[in-house]
Image: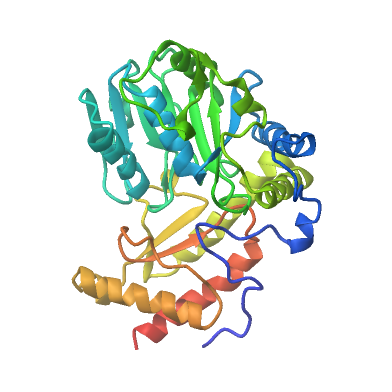
Length: 381
């Protein structure tokens, strides 16, 4: 039977993600517009984003936090081009964005002393193979595969290499072990539902020491430069952005952070995301046509929740046929207005990807699930 009720919001995109509950344009009314971002009130807004981010995420006081250009991608690139080359590098990849960092390091930076530890969609590479004497680059949560590292136990506390962590769909939804992480990046457009184009970059004291003691053999564009005369450019980490940010986006980021504080901070954000995962997991356990792309329950993402179609009628098809079924399924959901942008990432195996980050109400997930069953039945008629 076609469901009679539907989600109040059909926004299940994995980026940009759903706005917080109750959001409206009125949330931006306090934006510092028509003023320089370097003016006193402009800098104060940028510093407030940094301060509130530190407080919500529990980032140590001696870690530096900067707002940078180019979303999470820009923040990761800054780290790769500025820090790598001093030591051998281990690259972990099990989905699209991790593979992008492998390409950058091996084909653009062209570093030679590199190991790529990879796994297919749905799995993790062998984390025990990471050498603590090497720098390591990895995503905490694979946005396009729905697979996350279960914890930070595999990272040595006495490591001599740096850990560079792309945490763009993990920050604010998963517990990050800050003492184990030297560089952490994310963007505003994910778990707090902010706007795109701005990235966050966190550096541990060990990462700062690397910046001040090591000079890459290649030239760095202005947007990547974090030092001057061999010393860290402290202004970057005090709201003095390298390029001009959107103050509307800054205001929106502040709105998301204030909402996070108001509902109980990081524990509440994590609980909301985990509740969304549980709702889907409970449904999947009694639904024979669908499975998780993540092979192990402990590696299932609670934000980018990736599903695959396991119905024998579909798995018997070739890849193109499976992709066509998944495409039709996403199209039915969009036509009905119950789930927008719910198709799997273009490079991932065919299926669905439902965003379960903290701005999504579990009631919306619950309202969506009967539609998934109905839509699949419609497609398979």
